[in-house]
Each structure stands twice: as C-alpha cells, then as structure tokens.
Image (cartoon, rainbow, N blue to C red):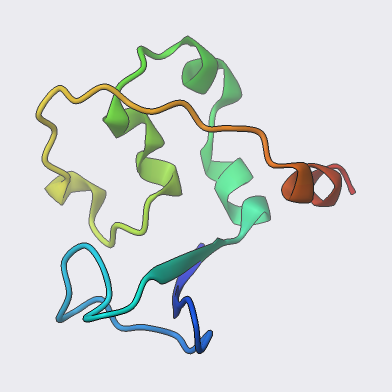
Length: 89
C-alpha cells in the first residue's frame, strides 16, 4: 500500500528503529492510490468527523489496532495538482 523512502536517496527505509522521522533525514511516503482507494469508503470518509483516526488508511501503520487516539483533530488533506491527473487516468 505504501513505501517509506529516504527523501534524499530514495532508498526504502525500515521503520523498525525509528518512531516519527529518519535518524537525521526526512522521509517520503509513496502511496499506491489504487490500493488505498479500494480500502476507503468515500461516503464514510466525507461524512466522518475531522479526527486523525479517519486517516488511518493513508498512514504507514502496520497494525491499525495499535493506533492510539487522543481525540486529536485532523488537518484537512489538500488537493494535489500533481496527483489529480494521475488519479483520473
């Protein structure tokens, strides 16, 4: 569904030894839009309250049942001009 890459080298990163970011470098998350779209119920997603947990299908989480929710609100996703054309095709 996704790959985590070193932003600079584009090499795949193992998340076993890091929590939120690379040791000294940022990560890039590459998502497979086709796989994610199969797991998303658009009606639920557009109607659900704006909480972080509704974005779990987009997150690089191995075990969603281990997700800890503290009632955080979520930053809305922004439309990407780069992905919009690719998703339509």
